[in-house]
Length: 193
Image (cartoon, rainbow, N blue to C red):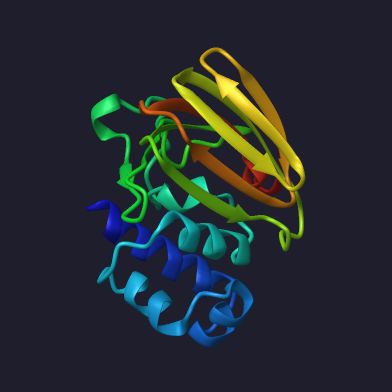
């Protein structure tokens, strides 16, 4: 299954599980009904900003949109590098790789991001009903992060802990790509216990 097909299945499944119509999800998320419909049919590659709005409206971490449902299968604790889903944002070119094993019940999720120079992306977490916690560990390059009115300049080796309850902006104003790992608290883990 391609990453766009996976996203279409996940968005559609989460929308239905929450009892939202296309119109209701459009109103909650601020994403047009037609765009959501195209995503659910796998006919467009959504940007990171759009996926962020949908994840927030569906009350899930962005990372969960990249998880494959494995009904009836035993969840495996190992995610081989070759099978880890990769997604490229069509607007910025940043590449996101879901490191954590799919559907394995764990309290955190790991994601690797490769962020091209000269690019920026914003995620609005202000409407999230429960804040999301994550830590960013810079592996290579530099990044500028702004969360609400706080600003950080991160270099390789730095680690930043954040509570996502405001607009978060990732920017690579440097001349080289940046690479970082995100560790996100999985809110679904505590709900499933």
